[in-house]
Length: 216
Image 1 (cartoon, helix red, strand yellow):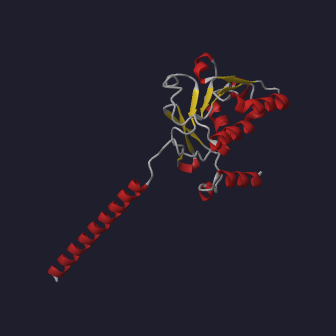
Image 2: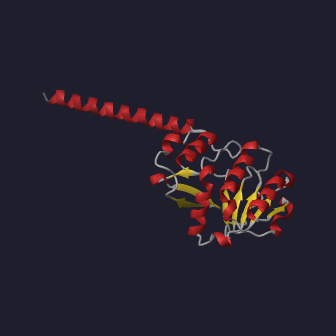
Image 3: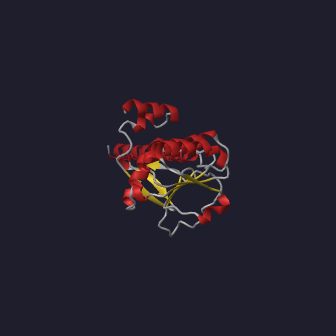
């Protein structure tokens, strides 16, 4: 009887070790199968909420919309999706802006948009070449470039709020809090994502926009 109990205990121990070994292999495979982050292919899933994110970020940094000096660094390459992201963000913010600077080497691309902003909101959109960026001002920067390092490390110790849209992954933490990259740090922004975000997180941008529009 004693030997039977001993062998049963040994078999149980072996089974547990086997289970832990299999689970460990699965964990390693899951981690290895996850594609490495690449700024060149990254699609920021929070573009549709960017106006709310900016509102939360500047509130935490004690910057009012009246004092917001928004700088948009144009996409480095001629990507239609990147241009659509920029326009989507600006169209949600246009009526609240008193200052807007577009840093771009493609001013002709934004000529019609600048005219629209002036006619509809009375906002004069400033344009600056990337080579002249250091001579401009702004306290919140949205960097839509993917590979260039126009900003360098100038905002690391600066009071300027620097948001890299594609260069660092934007993730969700507990309670659907968005972990927003701000410079080399991370800022927690909550109360923005809907409860069903996890269900629609893999939607493309058009479907997600449609879903938000239907909600009002």
